[in-house]
Length: 324
Image (cartoon, rainbow, N blue to C red; front, side):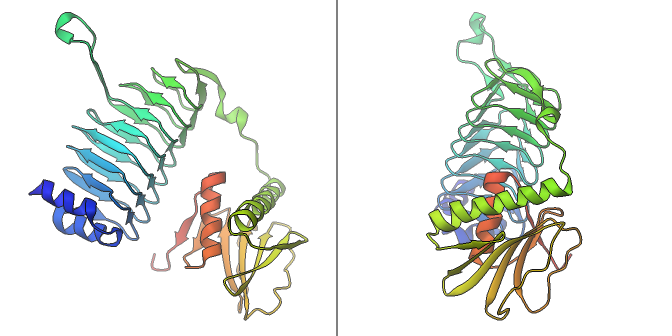
C-alpha cells in the first residue's frame, strides 16, 4: 500500500503533494513547502521545514529518516537512495543531477551546498569481498557553511568540518578539517577560508550592495526580463507589467531619495543601513543585507532580486514573519 501512496504522490500536481504526504505518509511538512512535478520522497519518517523546495524529477528513497531543514532547496534530477538516514540542515542546497547513496547516514549541515553533479557514497565495492577484495562502509558528515563545488566526489566515511570550500571536481577520500580549502584528486589542503575572506566594513558592504544591484539590473532586468532601465545616481527606474519601479541601495551613508509619486511607485531596495525603517506611504520591498530578512510579497521584481541574491551571491534571505 505504501508503494501505491508513493506512486500517487509522484504523479500528483505539485500543489497537492504536501497535503498528500501529510495524509498518506504522516510526514511533517512546514509552511510554504513546494514539491515539483514527478518528485517524491519515500522514507520511514519524513520532515521538511518551512519554505523548502524539492524540485521536479527528484526522487529520495531511504529506509531510514529524511529530515530537510528550513529554506533548503533540493534541485532537479537528484537521486538519493539507501538503507539509512538523510539529514539536511537549514538554508542548504543540493545541486542538479547530484547522487547521494545513504546506505549509511548522510548529514549535511546548515548553509551548506553540493554543486551540480556531485556524488556522495557511503558504500563502495564491486569486486567480491569473499575473494579478498576490499569493501568499505561509512557515514558521510558535511558540516555547516560548506561549499562543495560542481562535480565533487565524496568517499564513504568522510567527515568535512565547518567553513570549508571543496573546489570543483575534487575527490575527497579523507576527513577535511574546519576552515580548509581543498582541491584535487585526492583532495589536498591548499589554503584556509579565512585567507580568502576579507573583512567587511560598512563602506565595503555598501559597495558590495551597489555592485549586486548593478549586476541585477544588467543581468536580470535588462537581459532576462528585457526591461528598458534608466540609471541615475545609483538608482534604476523602469516600468514592468504596468507598474513603475525604482531599484536602489539604502546604505550606511544613505540620503533619503525622492520617491516621486509614492502612490504609483514600487521601490525595491538593498539595505545596508542598520535599523533602517521604511517610510510610510510608499510600496517598498526592502531586502536587509545585515539582518538577512525581507517582507513576504507577491511582487515579481522583489522575488527576482531575492532569488538573484541567493543564486549568484550566496546571500540567504529569510522572510519576516509577523506572527513570530
